[in-house]
Length: 258
Image (cartoon, rainbow, N blue to C red; front, side):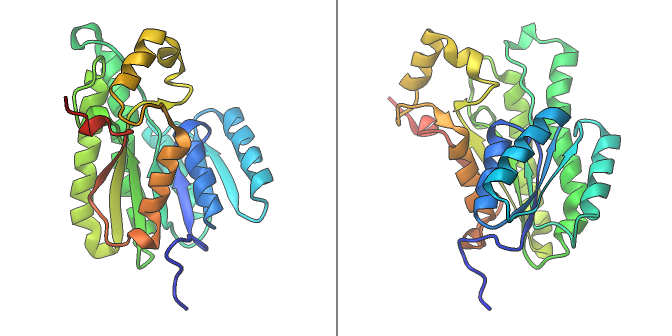
C-alpha cells in the first residue's frame, strides 16, 4: 500500500516545548495529519492542560505528556526512557523548546547566555543523539529543529540568541549529512516575529511593533500556526527529498532589500 504523501498516519512524534506557542501548535498540526504525539514541557500543569485541550480536539489519537526540563541531562535521559516504552521507536522529533536572553553583548551576564545555550542548543543536540536509535528503527524518519532568523542575520538585541540558533542551524546541516544513511532527515525552521507568550511584551510596544512590520514584507506578525505548518511539511513524505535545509518562516524579512 502506497504511503499517502500528505499524511502522517501511524507515525509517532516527540515534541519539546509542547505546552504553548510553536510547540503546542505543532502538536495540533501533526495530530491533524494523523500522527500520534508525545508532548514534553517543564511545567506539568500547563502540559496537562494543553494535553487535555488536544485530546478534546483529537479523541482518536494517542496524546501523552511528560514533564521534564530538557536542559537537564538526567531529565533528558528519563524522557527518552519513557519514549522508548511508548512503542516501536520514533518517526519524528521536533526540538521546539528554547530560551531567550535579550540585550546587547556587554549587558548579558554569563549565567544568562549559558542558560540560552543549555536550553536552545545543547538540549537539542543531546535529544537528537538520544533519539537517533529510535528514529533509525524506521526506513524514514525526521527531525525538525526550531531555530530563528537571528541565526541567519543580525537582529538587534539578539546576539546570544543568534549565536545559539546559528549553531543549531549548523547542527541541522551536519546531522542531515551524517544520518542520511540511517534514513533520518534533519531540517530546521527559522521564525521571525511570531505572536507567542514570549514575544507578547515586545509586541505590545507600539514603536517596536511598527518597526517589525516595517521590516516584514507581508506586513503582519506571524502566528505559531504559521511555523507549525512549515514544521509539519518538513515531516511529510511529500518532503522526503529535503534534508539539511533551514526554512525561514519570516514573512519575507530575510529577503527585504531597499
